[in-house]
Length: 75
Image 1: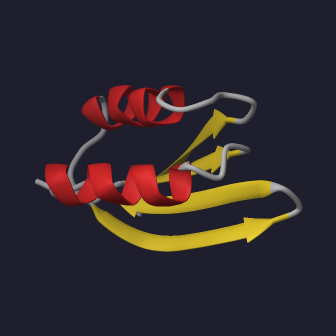
Image 2: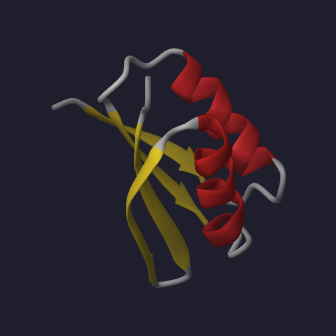
């Protein structure tokens, strides 16, 4: 299983979601993307975007001022 990492630190909404969307477009179904952000809004924004676009949230966590979301690319 391949996992890519997207550094979205120091970006404010809506840029983390836009960068996530751009990266996912280049990925295949079943691949995973770990998004690392410093904007707490991503904890709602990226899961909402994933629901709309058919991607699965595998993990969310907040640690040391960073918000990490792992998603799996849908079909």
